[in-house]
Length: 249
Image 1 (tube, rainbow, N blue to C red):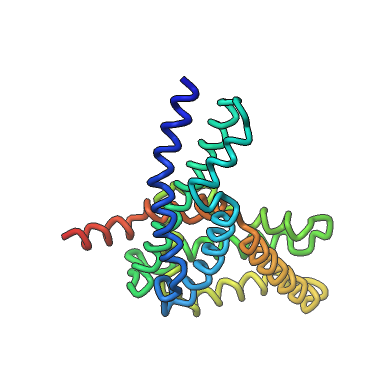
Image 2: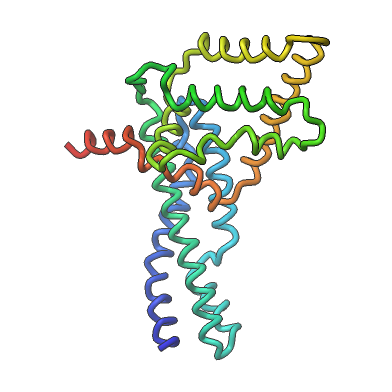
């Protein structure tokens, strides 16, 4: 039974590698995913970096994959484990391309905050970060990583649909900078109460900068699986579903 399944997966992988060649062709032309939207361009830069890394990690052809499983001799179970993992990697690569195309498709679209920017997920997200950062910015016993994780957990309580909508809002929503700056200023003013106000303000600002640098480094080192988990939920957003319905009319 195991040997039969090995052959079945190898047959399935023939088509998967045809799709991989199409993916490589797509990625070879930057005009396929370059947009006028700076937020999306930055996101796709890191996303595609993790995608290319995954592509380099797997066999480049079905023949190379066969050579790997032949090295396992007569151990069909090892072959199956390897082939199942390879098939999953190829499925993730295809899924990544779907997500990239979604971001490209929406890159020139406008977003309407139906309940006002002040009630949007992206506004609440930033408020949450600022307020939590004010709680820990001067806690020298916490590392930057610990502070970042404490402050950046807003999405944990969101549904997949809400997470997707948050990513749409951060990508194409037009922020009310005056409102956002007001929130940040109020947080700073509360911090500065009491002794050494400017020292507190500087320490808070440094904490924000350190967290931003940590986030950028984390994004730079994210695996394809990390990025799929983070951004794949855009397919569940109301905006994307509405956009798809309009495309299909």
